[in-house]
Each structure stands twice: as structure tokens, then as C-alpha cells.
Image (tube, rainbow, N blue to C red; front, top):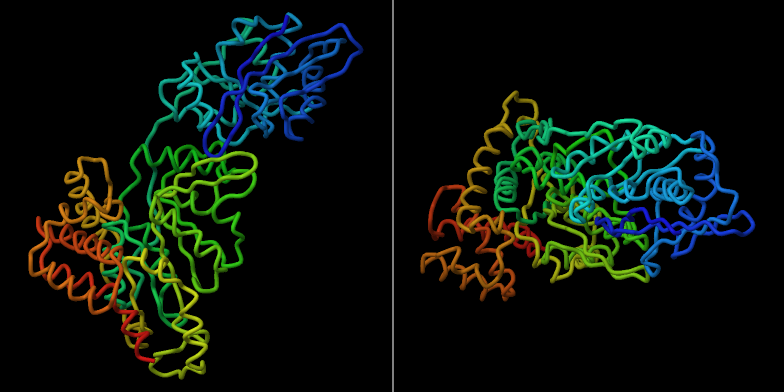
Amino acid sequence: MPCTVQGATLVGVDAIPVGVEVDLLRRLPAVVVVGLPAPSVRESADRVRSAILGAGYEFPKQRVVISLSPADLRKDGTGFDLPIAIGILAAAGRVPEDRAREYLMVGELSLGGELRPVRGALAFADLAKKMGMRGILVPERCAHEAALMEGIEVRAAPHLAAVVEFLCGRRDLPPRSETIAPGPTSSMDLKDVCGQIHARLALEVAAAGGHNLLFEGPPGCGKSMLASRLPSILPPLTIEEALECTRIQSVAGLRSPEGGLASNRPFRAPHHSISLAGLVGGATLRPGEVSLAHHGVLFLDEFPEFPRNIREALRAPMEDRQLVISRAEGRVCFPARFMLVAASNPCPCGYLGHPSRPCVCSPTLRERYRGRLSGPLIDRIDLRVQLHPTSPHELLQDIHGESSTCVRKRVVEARDRQRQRYGGLISSNAELPAEQVLNACDSHPLALALLQKHLEDGAYSARVGRRLLKVARTLADLEGADRVGLGHVRMAIDLRSDVEEQSCAF
């Protein structure tokens, strides 16, 4: 009779259950795998045969038919080696089937039977928990990651023989547990930045409200240095956020199985030569840079140099905080709750407005360079700050600004006010739905009048108006004010209009 063992495959950042059904037929010896297997799964037949022999068991001298259900779902990855091997041994009577059904199994097998780690152990453990299974069987090197999921029994084994002996009751594999506590934060400190008071303020406001930010200035003025220190002033990851980051990094194959829980907020800085698939996810439905920056920072240096299709692909996730990808293989929804920090030169040569180096670009080249950033994309950037070169006197003085610890304290307090105001449903002002902006800001009439005049004079869109109010609300939170005042709106306009006024100069 056919025997069924529970396996799983990854689709996006989620694990999908897959039943591994094995039957032994009285036919010429062969191994047949059906159920839309990818090449990595189809090739598992030879690995499993050698692994079973290497573990000291006899491989059935019959036709082995392996069916992976549901049959219309493409199965990919090497994690099916272990459930296929156990399914064959259960069908041959070597392993009790009822015992094997209690566990979800994932793991790659070497030719000698050793268990090797696979991607997405945390996602598999979460699936086993949701399915109500007794536990999950994983390779030894995946135990730390899988054990981060509470409420599920995690058993880890170094070898196929150890799994068989455990299922037969001849050996104990102790349940694994892991302490869930984020580790230390980024070692970079904001005090390393000399001068740039206005830019430091914009960075603090962006961190406090989760706002998108654009730095513009000549080469060497500190755009990349400021952006790289943004994670050091962001609030620490909560346990839920750390689990989500760990899960995404594990599915993408960027995390060591022994690494444990993610400790720092992600900071992703792809080069402008990145492909569209690398940014948003490819045909394999693996997460791209946008999802890898979830709960963290996506830094795009030389923003206008990115291809237009890549820049415009950011519009939807910047607004919706998620990314939906439809491919022939299926449709998945990736989390994309990131802060965009972009950096740009003021012109192609980079020296427009420089105090000592002249710009050599023609007005046409400047207009064309600035025109690479479309209006809908610029509308979604809350803060736009012009940076100027730091003077040699400031650079050579041993004078440091506020440390990241001091700034972070204010940011955390502002975020706490936002969580209390929104009942924990929204973690930052930037995520506030459009219909709730006016009520949440509770603006003074003079502040609204100033904002209205600014929008009318500049012919800005309604989206810009809402985002300015959100920034003003963040400034009020940093001051501990319950109501958005005239000064908050004026500062929000100043933090966005700086670059626009500079661009009008030519």
C-alpha cells in the first residue's frame, strides 16, 4: 500500500504543504517521481538511493513511484530528500508509517546519508505549527533556526540513520529550543558625521516616522555616510519583526542556518546595475532587495542612474507596504515595509551649486538628469534635503555631534507615542491611511492654512499634502506635542522644499 509522509516547498516567503506519497510496484526496478517536480527534485532519486544504502538499509528492488501532491504545484529545492527517503523506507516496512506521519520533514541528503541544511527552516517550522503536527524533523544545522518558532516540537538529526532509529523508537532526538532575543544593534554611530545639521535632522525625522528620504548633493558631502547610519537610530527590532526578517533572509538563502534570530534592522544597498528581478523578485518567486529590506532601509545611491523600469517598480511597494508578483509559476505577495533612502547628485557632473568647483553641464543636461525621477515617484518621497560640502575647518575639528544613542532615544519615544495613538495597529506615521491623516494630525487652523497655500502655490498633488501632514505629525511627536502646530507644518515644508528651490535656481 502507498505510504504518505509530509513534506513542504517554498513559494515566496511561505512554506506550502506537500504530501510525499510512495508506492512500491512489482515491476522492473526504477524510481519515478511525478507531481510537477523541478530538476532538483527529480534528481533526488539518485541521491536518496545512495543515502539509503549509505545509512545501512536495503533499497527496494521494485519500481518506486513517488507522487508529490498537489500535483499542479511546482516543487523546487532539495528539502524533499528526507521525506522521500523516509517514505520509501516506510513503504518497505522499515519505518512505522503512523509515526512518520506525525512530523513534517525537510532536509537534503548526501550520498553517504548525512543531512544537509536547507533554506527556510523557520518557514517550515511555522507551517508545521499551523498544520497542527506534532513536530518537525530537520537537519542538525537547521535546528537553531527552526527552534525560533515557539509551540512546535523541533527534532534535529545529523544522519538519515538517526532519523530512522528515532522513528522506530530505538533512539531519542531531544527537542530543541532557542532563546528568542534580538542581539546587539549596528556598530555605526551618527556622531561620526561632521556638520550637516539639516541632514541629521531629516534623518531623525525619517527614523521617527518611517518616512522616505532623498539626499541630493555633490560627491563626498556625506550622503552615503548618513544613510548607512540610519539603522543605528531606528528602534530595536521587536520579536515579531526579528522573526519576519529572519524568515525572509532564510528563504532567500542569505542567512547561515546556525545564525539564530536577526539582530539588526536590514540595510540593503544594491548597485544601480541591479536587474528588475533582483530588486522585486524573479521568475523563481524568491524575495528581491525590496523584501530583504523589510523592517529596515533600502538605500539607492546614484538614484537617477537606476533604469527607469526599476525606479518605477518602487512606486507600488512604497505606497502599499507589500509587493505582489505574478508569474507563470504563480502569484505571491512579498512583505515590503521598508524605508527608502535615495541619494543623487544635483547634475550629471555632480558639482551644481558647489562653492568652489564649477558645473560643466548644460541646462539641457541638467533638466534631462532631473527628469529621470518622475512626478509620481517624487510624490512618494516625504523628505528631500540638499547637502553642501563640509568645510575643511569642520572636518579637522575634533567636534562630534549627538551620538546615535541620544537620537535613538528620541526616536523610540516618538514611535511609542504613535503606537499608543493608533492602538498598535500602525507602527509609524508613514503607514497612516489617507482617510485617517486629518484626524490623526489634529492640526491647528493656521497650520492647515499654511499648508493649503503651499500646495496651491506649488500646484502639488493631494498625495504630497497628506505626506507633508504626516511629516508634521512626526515633528510634533518628537516634541511631545498632542497637536500639529504652525511650526511643525513650516518645518515639514522646509524639509521637503529644499531641493525643489535649489532646482528652480537654474
